[in-house]
Amino acid sequence: MNKPFLIGVDLGTMGTKAAIFDTAGNLLADAFEESTLRYPRPGWVEQDQDDFYTSSARTIKECVEKSGIKSADVAAIAFDGQMAGIGAVDADWGSPTPYDSWLDTRCGAYVEMMKAHADLVIQKTGGPPTYCHGPKVLWWKHERPEVFESVSKFVMPTTYAAGRMAGLRGDEAFIDYTHLNFSSFSDTAAAVWDPELVGLFEVPEEKLPRIVEPWEIIGKLTASAAQDCGLVEGTPIAAGCGDQAAGMLGAAMVEPGTVFDVAGTASVFAICIDRFVPDVKHKTLFNARLVPPDLWYALAYINGGGLNLRWFRDELAAAEVTKAEASGQGIYALLDQLAAKVPAGSESLLFLPHLGGRVCPNDPDIRGLWMGFTWSHTKPHLYRAMLEAVAYEYALYLGIERALLPDLAFSEARVIGGGASSKLWNQIKADVLGIPYVQLSREEFAVLGSAIVAGYSVGVFTDLKATASGFVHPTSRLEPRPEYHEYYRPLADLYATLITDTKPFFQRLSEIPSPPQEE
Image (cartoon, rainbow, N blue to C red; front, top):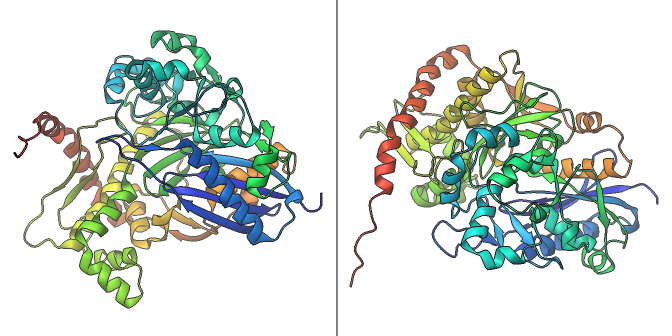
């Protein structure tokens, strides 16, 4: 082999992205393919598992062709992907179930059932029962028992794609330890399945995959997969990791006290820490493993943070879209420009960003809400209030982590995702949280993190933290403004009260039956 190259593949909600890097972290080529999501019933969101394989193969092949490298010089491949949803394989790696997305809420009744044992689940797994693996597995067990019987192992998107590339059998399925906080059945600190939880919920342990380290070589490219990818048969495949863990590694989140903000489809707020501290009291934060084995992170998220802005664009901002297209300006840049003219606090307008139900903690009845709007409020006020709402929700998460780890100093927030380009949103978050907001020197964090895992799996890299830190650096920094931080404090407190006080009203709304059918 000449100079080695590494491939990272990110199996995201909106699409699959593949990228090729050299050993200095330089991006040589990337490719993206949009996902196809199915909505067979209200609240159901599915994806064909075969799409994870085919989209990976096509985007890898496109990268190889774009880069002009010799396929024999690819040292290894690693995948990262969506973490809270779940799929399954049968004995021959077929798909007895579709991918049951993290956006799918059909398992709600089993979330409620598991909440009776929430303290135990959180204490052992690091995460509360929500729309994640445990309730989803129970839904398939109780609602589709004939399908459940045919399942060899329940798997992640990363597992399905990597395993099919390697030609694995069902009994060889795996899950890496960065996914365990969503499992509901693990002893996450020990990285094993927990007998008490498995027994409590009567889940056959033989249907759960073996637990591995992210850099374990789980197999090598088969001849057919190599042909599909434009690579060489026998190329090593690492187990890979969850997309949040990959993104945090790619962003060099390797120092405790660093905050990680993914301003994407979901708004994800995570804090790098050096110990396992489950949030049993508040049942809000997930405590999960990072790729480096001595690091953890506390995480919570709004399931539609960025998706809310897209909804606003599509449903309420037609005139602004037309104006942006005519001027050649991006629509979100234009909306930011208009919202920047609105005073901080949106002139006493508050927004609840949980249009799809609140996830952290799981309160599915809570929905979106603008409160306090008057005839003097305009569309820019509504939009700014949406940006501020994410910051207020983040302030709740930060307050919980401060209580759990009072000795932890918070140094800076590193922001990635499409929303990272919004200077207005970054400044709002910095002001509300009182933490500097930093933009980074690159954008392809998850695929870079996976490429680092791939390199580590075959000895190209010998230190995960040092490698990641050498590949990325800050490019801009927004400091929190003390006077704005003080101004926002009572608004953030009022936001927290609003969620609590409106919960009974949302519950009553959810109990109202559907209207009579028109004849």
